[in-house]
Image 1 (cartoon, rainbow, N blue to C red):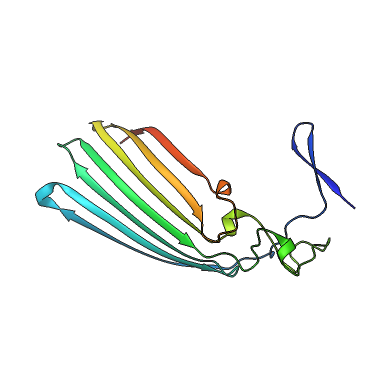
Image 2: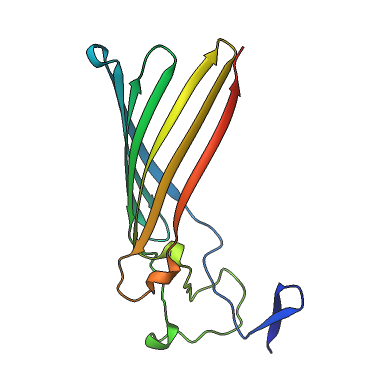
Length: 177
């Protein structure tokens, strides 16, 4: 029995089976950060590392570094860099045709598990950015930033087009009291 899934108004995709992942997921992480001020140059460095592992079999590492540079008394310029890498979930398959798994309609959360969600594949991601913040008064701060984000797969099977890249611009207003 096939079901139809509406993906846009009046557009239907016939689906004979869906993806199947476990009903529960245990997650553990370890986080460490180091911040240090450099008084002589009116700057500071912020560094952080996170280790992550879960019951899906994903192991990930994140490294992040930012430099906060004071430009006068009221302006801070902050370049930053972040790198992320992860292994694939045990049940990630781009193509089930190359496995012994035969998808059938079974209760969701019951093995065999399989997914082709690129977010569960082996992947790397990096971002770098620049933010400027101006404290206009004791009660108002304005900021603007730009960040470039790029993700890529490491399994050699999942198409590169599955992994997003983005340029993110942000403008903010902060009221202080």
